[in-house]
Image 1 (cartoon, rainbow over the protein chains, first blue to last red):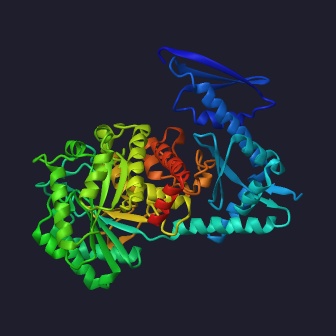
Image 2 (cartoon, each protein chain N blue to C red; image 1 turned 30 degrees about the horizontal axis):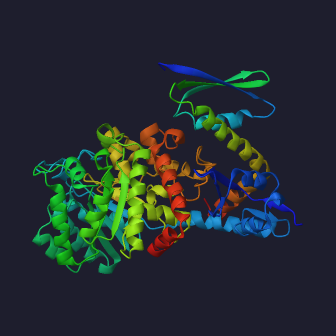
Length: 94
Length: 467
């Protein structure tokens, strides 16, 4: 990307899961090229951003924050959700 | 104090920092801020008692005592909502001709000139067509003629009506003719008198945008449409015409003119959507406007419509209305694009001028452009009219949006669809990448906008009045 700057962010593996990072990055695809690198105890997220686009960090961290919350929510409710969906599909004979 | 458990839900932050949450029953609730969301997820008892009561009533949380009952209620509503999308009636679309007198810049089907041979369904195919319709659907049959310009094949429509009347009771079918109205004449109008026939026509946002994109050799498509709407009204009475508006870049400032045109013509219903990228529209117009630009236009349009309604002038915009109905689980909130599993094939079927059968209008557009043979489900002229639904079933299996990446954690999951045909065209497979899907961006924006409108009770009253 011509005129692009590199934005590098680091996250501790003990506080942020790979899945939360990947889910947040999914919604960034349209805004920026990115890569996710494994640095042992850390995840490194690298964005190539246009000079004008300074909001990418804010957007990404907001998404990431939501996915971390969703992970907590899923720990409480995911099994129940799957059971409800399975029961419904069975009732509908799909 | 009672001990509470969470039931499954999704969430989305809105622009004013409030947080919208929804559950498998497709019930929505707005939390005032992110802090309340954190309290809800991490420690429910930190929420104020009134909020707890509401969240319990709306099936977001439950006490241990009635956990079982609330789970059963959720399961039952979830099943009911899927069943509603599975069992709603199917629209049958017929393309009697691909010929057209217009040459629209955003045409999705690559119409052909009106004097060209070989692009019409022959009259001899009508018996097979009626057999096919009766085989795949039960009455009342909702039949829509698409084009090209269907009025160029008026003899076909007349003959089809006659034979349909012989095959089933006359009150068991209705027609909509999707037409520019430019070719309507006294003979056609006389024939329509007393029949269950309506018209769907196009009025774009402003005369300039309309005539620039809906090209007629006489360069007066807009004027003709207006004149012919009045002719239809005079002959057949009001309420026989619905309009569709395709918003292009040239129409972005035409929101007031669009409403004024409808009011001047006494039209009380409209359907407004951005130019679509299906089929042959891609190179011409697809990226003509961004969804943000469309939404800026659309919000001005809708606020004007709200004002008119508050003044006592009844005018409905159906694109907004259908999103509202999907959010409140209205009984008749069926819209093929917003169904999960998708409406493709199960809620719509199209027979084109060759007799080929497609699962939707969009599927024939994608087939015309890309020649993707799997989209042809069958052909009405083939012996036994056997349908090959293998591909369609695969599309539908991949369209339950609780299971689709990008939709699975979306707050609008229970109201939206996943439109496999759109994503097949854009991404080469039925799921696609929702992060750069115009479909996803458009519908999320409209749903967000509905909640923005609902903050004002007077807007809520207007939309409830449309029900």
